[in-house]
Amino acid sequence: MKPTLFEVMRMNRICRMALVTCLGSFILVIFYFQSMLHPVMRRNPFGMDICCRKGSRSPLQELYNPTQLELSNTAILHQMRRDQVTDTCRANSVTSRKRRVLTPSDLKHLVVDEDHELIYCYVPKVACTNWKRVMMVLTGRGKYSDPMEIPANEAHVSGNLKTLNQYSIPEINHRLKNYMKFLFVREPFERLVSAYRNKFTQKYNTSFHKRYGTKIVKRQRKNATQEALRKGDDVKFEEFVAYLIDPLTQREEPFNEHWQTVYSLCHPCHIHYDLIGKYETLEDDSNYVLQLAGVGSYLKFPTYAKSTKTTDEMTTEFFQNISMEHQTQLYDVYKLDFLMFNYSVPSYLKLE
Image 1 (cartoon, one colour):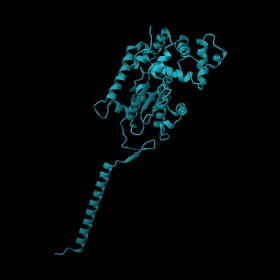
Image 2 (tube, helix red, strand yellow; image 1 turned 120 degrees about the horizontal axis):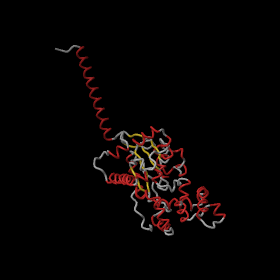
Image 3 (tube, one colour; image 1 turned 90 degrees about the vertical axis):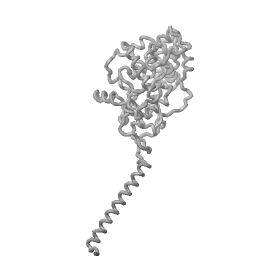
Image 4 (tube, one colour; image 1 turned 90 degrees about the horizontal axis):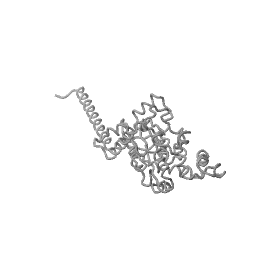
């Protein structure tokens, strides 16, 4: 029996629908396998293409609950550094916890990156110019792509980075609790010599010569010439050390940030730092921070050989003319930094 015209039309419509369904499924399968082989590329904040950037995991989660359950040697090293700070604070609780409540001025060195949930406490003479450049890239929303394209003086303009003291107290507490906090430290006396060389032996630092140099010459140099008293541009390292250990200096005003202790700048006995990088392992520690922040695949910490960098050998030479008494007094000023960050007493010191 021949099918009617109506039945033929009905069968043709069913065949067409089946064909469309099969074709649609086939196309979906193709797109699926293409997406598996070639993941969708996304634009990162700095204008570069990146693949499969980390999702909602914060730096704190990556640090304390890593994707890989087995802790790496790097993670273990930083845990040991955290423990060292905790133990030192506990052992020196009378000294380290004199002021239990931090004021907004205590937080002015803590730079905040909202996008990546980071807080960085900058310490002058510990690669802070380059770290400020990196923070400007991280917080610039695409304005900057290469840290080294940012002029050094621009990196130190206060308005270019937001610091923790600019927030309300509830906002401060929230960020201290939920953001990954890190800082970088350096052997204390090497950092001190670096500060002296930069601020007192370079002719262009006239502001430091006027503000501190003239004061140091007047107080520490007998029979100083009128020119030296007026310019303050020829301060000797011995005079600088004598100025630092002078009780009058410590009473009249806080140390300048370039030779202030890390303990006093970043308050590690009051603020729990999740990661403590060291100048001696700067590149590895810096890139570990960037890796935890989820940007390590396209942003590296800038490194370059600087011929004028202060070294341990150079520091030894500077301390040769410092008396045993002054060495002991100076060590007492920076003792907590030595202990807290696990720096041994330098071999060149002759402590009483």
